[in-house]
Length: 306
Ligand SMILES: Cc1ncc(C[n+]2csc(CCOP(=O)(O)OP(=O)(O)O)c2C)c(N)n1
Picture 1 (tube, rainbow, N blue to C red):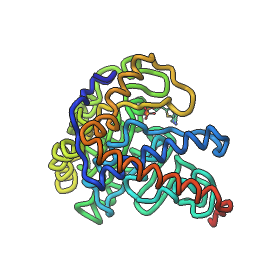
Picture 2: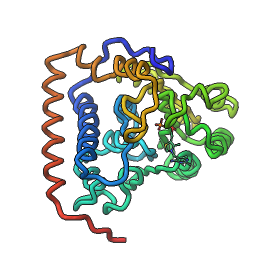
Picture 3: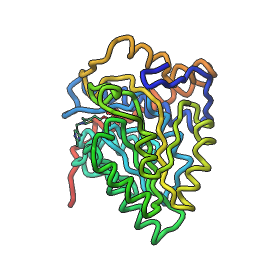
């Protein structure tokens, strides 16, 4: 059991494409930590290590016409949507080929129908507005927004849920409940539950305990379809865990909690389920990311064209 109560100790499976995407995100973020350690990156970074399977599971339930709103822990959100690690790394390093000219960094990205923000809670009202627009102009599409459990401390979340329910907006809220917000365990800052809060606004809630992509997709597919077709907003809450610190070097958790999170890591579970195929895919993505780091590091600085 994780600190959020997740039971992830079963053998999950992924096809080659999904496995490659999971491992790409894992090695991309490990490379970021390495670059930071070598003084090659400025600012900070929030890795989604341990949570990669959430956006990877979602990617086949979403279409290019849907909007996706990522958050501060958003590398996985971006890489699950775009096979563009070089563009993202260039953005983070401020090098040529950067997705947003190198001025957005890892937290503030705008590309096609993908938007991310480092400001907690900011995205939900914006996503609700976009969902209203989509309902009127492109029926069948939706706005999907990723938030953490700690972001339920922002009032804007409730304003957005209220209108999404009242106006029947095609809004899909993905909650990555990793049991902690920066240094505050969820149990010490949240009264009640995410489910009760969503249901208080008449918004359907679905909890997900698994890290198995096909299980997640089978559970969510009919609900996501209702979001699209009936304009019935949904809060899907993943009981997950982050392996690393909040950002860099600021881990206040009990070492036993970290040990438990590592024990339930999808990387270990997928590896044990299919060791040889996993090892090949793992090595391929490690080499792929190494090559991208070499390529992007050698590029000249990015230039921002307003
Ligand atoms: C409005 C606002 N307040 C504070 C912060 C600083 N901050 C960044 S992430 C974070 C905690 C977020 O916790 P949670 O929503 O649970 O997401 P997690 O980091 O666990 O993925 C805080 C307090 C912020 N980015 N925005």
